[in-house]
Each structure stands twice: as structure tokens, then as C-alpha cells.
Image 1 (cartoon, rainbow, N blue to C red):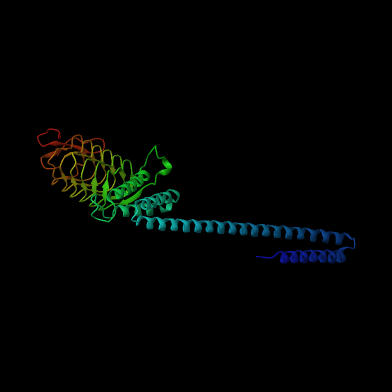
Image 2: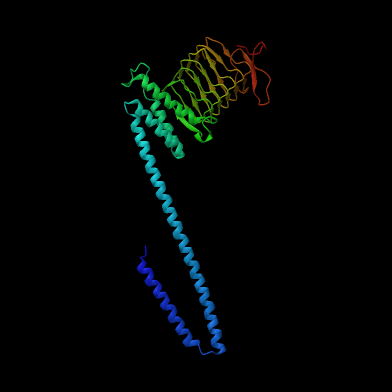
Length: 344
């Protein structure tokens, strides 16, 4: 960085050089003859060009210096934001390990604020909340020393944070609260009254999870794989109007509620329910199976309703069934081998 003294001295030097040049030119070409006048005009023109070029170069240097200053300021602001976010994330993670329920809640809400203000950290925030929900838990409090009622309150809050920000369209929360297309891994988690209605997910991993209370994935869209293998649904569950773009895996899942609804679900890839156990009624009415539907060995003491569902005729129908006429999408309903339409 140049000092003021250096700038002043350089200005004085420029003035002295200009004065000396002017005196030398007047002495050499100040005779008043037409030739001297023409030479002075040529020198003035050349000097103007030189000064203009110098001015342009000075402007370019000034612009470059300004740009460099702006970039440095942006980088400093970015570094400060990253440090603040890292500190907030670390503090929130530490709070989640506290034995005090209010402290754990504070950590969750701090993570929510971080995800809302910093989109680049949203997946990390979702991953940490999911990791918390994967920690051992029982309503009897036998898994940890924490009070089970307080821990239930914290876990429900964590579930609500996920549900609030993973919903694609929530007129109450507003579009700005949507964290688009996150992946969730809640394998082995104990989830209570999970509300994932209308969520948009890239991957959904619920392997071995336990769902207590009413569970809703109504209208959810999962663009990648959905893994519910060995999951247990203790009460009613609905996937009505959901859309699975990737493989949907429900092998060895247990549905203990009175009704497990897959009404109107769109399965773009394979849907594997082999073997799954439905202790109550299971509804697949109006579902669309674009890939293979595997449920030959699914156990359903209650009724399994596939009325008005359509299937891909490229795959074998279940024993005792055959495909009816194709619809506009090339899918077919199931009819009994006797020709009777599928009924509950």
C-alpha cells in the first residue's frame, strides 16, 4: 500500500518532468516558423494520445483494484459465515448430547435455524436430526437414563422439524420453508405418529424402523429408492396417493394396524412386498404398478384389496389371476382366472 508521502512526491516529480519538457520544447521549436508550429502540433497530438492511453491504463488498474477489493470482502464474509455456521452446528450437536430435555430441544431448533438460513448445510442438518432419531429409545425408558416422557417430547419435535421442511407444498409454512429433495436415513429408528405427508425425498431409508401411532406418507414423492424392509407399523398407516419413482422395498415388513392403505399409489419401478405381513386390511385400490409387483408370499389374514389397481403385463400375475385389457398407459387390471374382476 502506497503512503501519502510517496504519492505526493510522485506528483511533484510528474509536475517537474512536465515543466521541464515544456521548457525544452519551447526552446527547440519556439522560433515561430511554420515548420516549428507543425512539429509542435504533432508533439501535442502524440502527447494527447499518450496521456489518454495512460488514463485508460490507470482506469483499468483502478477497476482491477476495486474488483480485487470486492472479491476479498466477499471471501472474508464467506469465511466469517462458514465459521459462524460451523460453531453453531458444533454447539447444536453438543446440545443434543445433553441429559436435559430443554437443552436438546434448543439444539434441535438451532439446527433448524441453520438449515433455514444456509441451504448448503440443509442435508447435513437433516442427517444429524435423523442420527438423533436413530439413537436407542423405548417408551419405558429402559434404553437410556433419560426421562422417557421428556425424550418423547424431544423426538416428536425432531420429527416435526423434518416434516415441516420436507413437505413440498405446505400453505401454512410457506414455500420458503421447503428444503427441496433431501435424503433421510431413519433405519432402526423408533418413530411416533410420524407425519411425512406431501414430503419430497431423494432417498428414504427406514430399514428396521418401528412406527408407533398413526403414520402418514400420504402424497409423498420419493425420487430414488425407498427401503422399508423389516419395518414394523404398530398402528394404521397410509401411503395413499404417494409416488415411488425408484424401487420400493417392503420385504419382511409387518403391518399390525387395522388398515394399511396404498390406495392410488404410483410405483414407477418394482414394488417388493415379499414377504410382508398384513395383520389387518391392506388396500391397493387404484394403485399403478409400472414395474414388477412381488407379493406372492405376503401374509394377509385380513383382506388385501387390489380392486381397480393396474399392473405391468410384462410380469407374471399372481397365482389365480390374469391381466385384463390395457389402459392408455399400457397397464392392465387383474381379473380372476375365471374372468371375474379382482375383489377384496
